[in-house]
Image (cartoon, rainbow, N blue to C red; front, side, top):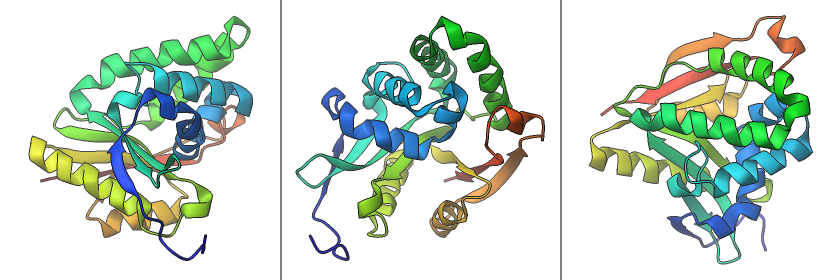
Length: 209
């Protein structure tokens, strides 16, 4: 395939059987997952389990996949802000199972740091928990197509859209601001935090109606 040509693709609801393709996309969208769980293999198990599950922030139920006929090359997951509490609880259970009892205390400490980085998710928002495109397909407008579909769906529901991006991820920040998102809050890790979780901080962006 010509790497400069945008592939033909369809946007469709994600399904459980997409889990194998969705796992690296979730980890690309949420690098904090590997930081919280401590290693790549554990993070992969957790991401796949969270995608297959019914009530997590990365569940297939809330996903939209960009598919060229050979499987997902891009993924976005988004859910109503009012569901965050129950979904966060379900996600925590999945992560704990993936980490195992031996790593439970480290998981709890890292999880508390990540929780402090997340600004409150308002009920009137559709929250984007993951947006990613496989590396070989980036730069072709696939991520933009996915987030634009989320924006259109949110408008039909009468909701705004919220998401988080890394404070150092200038490419993502430019993309979202170009789509009308505004930075509403920035939270940074402390020097002590970075001994446990290698994340500089998160920027909350919102686009309201």
